[in-house]
Length: 425
DNA sequence: TCTGGGGTCCTAGGACCC
DNA sequence: TCTGGGGTCCTAGGACCC
Image 1 (cartoon, rainbow, N blue to C red):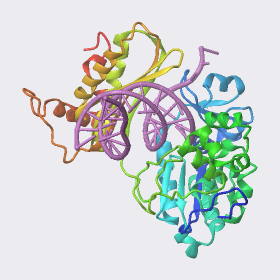
Image 2 (cartoon, chains in turn orange, cyan, green):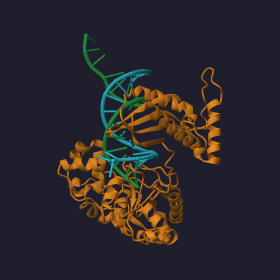
Image 3 (tube, chains in turn purple, orange, green):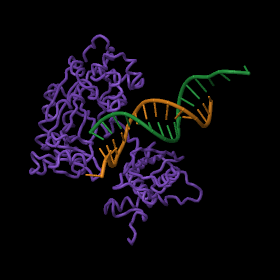
Image 4 (tube, chains in turn brown, green, yellow):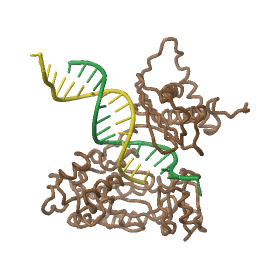
């Protein structure tokens, strides 16, 4: 880390030196599809959802027409009518992702996946064996290309924040090593929105102060940035603008990591990121509806999906949140915390129904409903309080039977009776 | 035929307890 | 007579990420 020039805060003392790689697949979903179908080579490819969906991934050919992740599919088709449009195949992406993670794991044990297509690697311990960050980055990129037939980009730095920004600048199919001494020079000319965790709203806030680049923010008094963004967030953005970031790669464990970037606690090397904090599901209707029966049926389906995943993960939860998005895209959430944690479909749905009834919707046009369960804890060790008159294991046993059947015959084979269409036996 | 679905974390106010 | 703070839990909304 370079010493900041006048106006910058001092770097944190006694920081353990690290070398962090951020590895990010290039146009991951589109690249996997193209790899498996050579006729797509050189063709604009868009991976996305149904008619109300958004673009999940766009090949670089499609990006040349202005197509980006996150834009509505309808707009994407207008921008690039000649594109090949594909539905996502998550099972395939997961398989490729696992293989890529195996490659990472052979380079260093400290790997922190952020999603299917990107991960941080702390390679400090591998430098002696494999060479510097540039050599290790080249090795990873060559192996991913040779073994998986897709390309990735690598950013290397001594902080995760800078490594993340660097990989993006290296895209596609490139790599960028930012030595500590070059961090400030690298960051300061960039638009502030390039910083990990600084999104559109924050960019707009800073724009109001006339701050456009990372350097603008760095050379603005910390207190001013804090007034604009809030004390904690403002301080962290100001730090990041100087390349100061003491978060470490939290490797060795599960897939969880904060996607906002900031509040990731400065974990210990190799620490376990820990269990999931919540499990949820939501769904946008093909067309808006105001029919309470339709809404409740969808909420039941989503509840069953969520609790099945909870049982598979062997967690129970206490806090149930119902989400409703209206036709005008305004979104509300209503939460209720149960006295005892549960993973039982029937019990969670009871709470969902109560919360939903409390909304008092009067023929409002609804676009989306969702269910989420928070306050999770491991199921083992949780002893259930039987309510007076309740049959022990009644509903829970029914759920387990559903889970077993779903495992054998597929999710569609077993579902609550009210989800069967009219006229079905 | 605008705007998915899966998450994480923060903020801020009120209740409640000590 | 007037006036406490801190901690924790709960809830609603919002920002951000891929």
